[in-house]
Amino acid sequence: MAAPAKGVRRRHPTSVGWWPVVFVGPLLAGVAVFYYYPIVANAWTSLTRSSAFGRNSRFVGIENYEALLSGGELGSALGNTVLYTLIVLLGIPIAVLISSLIALPGLRFANLYRALFFMPYLAMPMAIAQVFRLVFNGDFGLVNQGLRALGVQQTPYWLTTPGFALFTVAIFGLWASIGFNVIILSAGLKGIPGELYEAAALDGAGSIRQFFSITVPMLTPSIFFLTIIQTINGFQLFDALFAMMGWTNPALPQTRSLVYLFYHQGFILNDKGTAAAVAMVILVLVAAVTLVQFLGQRRWVHYG
Image (cartoon, rainbow, N blue to C red; front, top):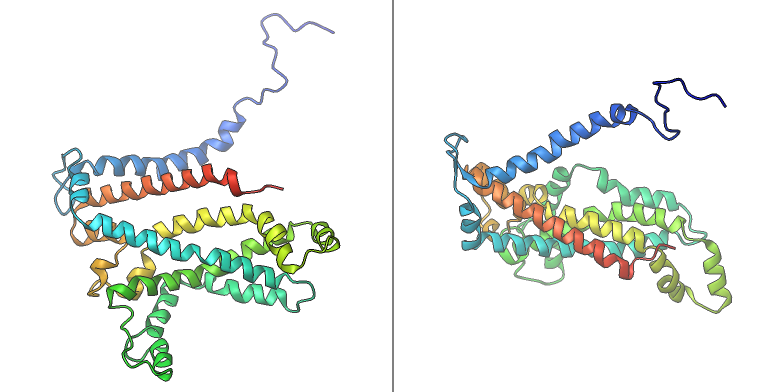
C-alpha cells in the first residue's frame, strides 16, 4: 500500500466534514431564533416593568413574581387549570375502551367509526365551542331542555355560574380530545401480537381478563404519550374558555386559566412584565410536570 504524499492529511474513514452543519444548521438556527430567543426575551421581560406600550422599560427584579404570589389570581388560575387538565385526562381511559371495542374481531365499518370519532378533532375549536355554548345555554339550551323534560325545575346557568362554568368547559375539552386519543390508541392496538390473545384464550382467560392483562399493559406506551400531550394541552387552555365564556362573563374571575390570566395581564391591563411572569410560571410548571411524568413512566409503562 502506497504511503500518502508528504503534507497531505489522511482523512478518517468516518469523517463526514461540514455537510451535517450545512443541512442541520438552518434548522438549528430557526429553532434558536423562534424558540429559544423568545424564552430568553420573555424571562428578561418578566424582570422589568414598562408603560402600556412597552416603552420606558426598567428593571424591577422579582417584583412581578412577588405581585403574582401575593394576589389570589395566580392560585385560582392554577387550580382551575389543574382541575380542567384532570377532567380532560379522563378521556384517555374512555378512549382505551372505545378503541378496544372498535378493534373487536368481525366488527363491520370499524374504519368508519374511527373516522367519526376523529372528525371533531379536525373541526375548528372556536366553532365547536360556539355550538357547546348554545347547547349549554341556560335559557334554551338542549341540556336544560332535557333536564326540564325529566322534571328538574331549577336548571342551572352553566356558563355564568362559577361552580358549573369550568366543568362545562372541561366537558368540551374532554369531548374534543377523545377523537385524537382513539386514533393513537387504535394504532397502538395494531401493534399488539395476536398470539398473545390466542395463548391467553388457550389458558382460559376471558375477554375482560385479556383486556386488563394484555391490552392495557401493551397500550401503556401510547397511554403515556397521550398523557404528556393532553397535560400540555390542558395547561394551554384559552381558546375554548374565551369562546364559551367571553370576557364579560361574571363567572370568569373564578374560572380563568393560567393562559387566560396571561392574556388578561398582557392585553387587557397592558402589564407586560406581569404577563411575562405568568408565562414563565406556565413554562416551569409544564416542564416540571413533564419531567415527573417521564421519571414515573419507568414504573408503569411496558415497552414489549
